[in-house]
Image (cartoon, rainbow, N blue to C red; front, side, top):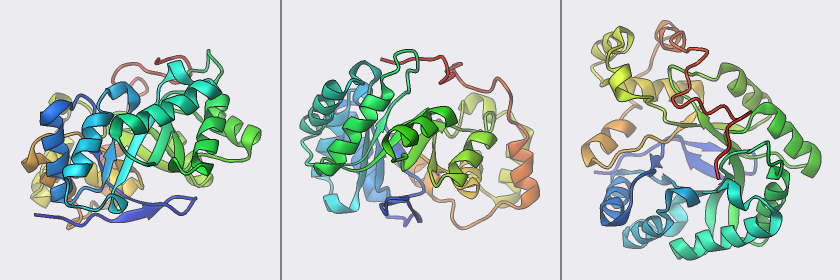
Length: 280
């Protein structure tokens, strides 16, 4: 069964689905099966990263799929330890060799790592890789407004997308507002937060019951109505289908607000503040 997913257009003209598949921790043959299942179900956006150590699995799933490569949006991300220009260029090439792909549709800098202060050099590498045809669209992940402003100030080009931690316990209202004003699309990682926590919230249970939907579907619909692209991870074909079956109902303003007010100042899942946190 294949389900159609709406698309959005990035500021560089690239179109992408509003929901994709997260693949962190999916590896090997089980990972290939999960990704091919998702593609068969209707997913066209597949999110990966160099540090997930599964780009080869992603490439194998793409080759096994009956969906043409041109119809898929494949993402990967540059790790912090390779943020100098020369290392970034080599890593982008290595990412492609691992996946045995000719290009990535979207390539992101995974974290700004501000103490290292090399993300502008990495951004220039992504700009050049795009010119060389290795990447179709370039973006970032976990960048704060000051990081985004610096990239544009230094290079004249802002990211097409910023993938950030976004879920009901951390709704990133100010960051999303900045993105909207600057034509940058918001993409949500860990969109469902911790399942064990959200299942205990009466708010979700009530809304889910009213719409005859699951709690996961309610939360992913909330992301969609916020204008965010979400990438929930699931290896189960049933849950994969469930996660994209959110376009036949809508949350009203009161329901949207009742979810948004659950946000917390310390709502990050792992206390990974991009102003301080560094990942290599």
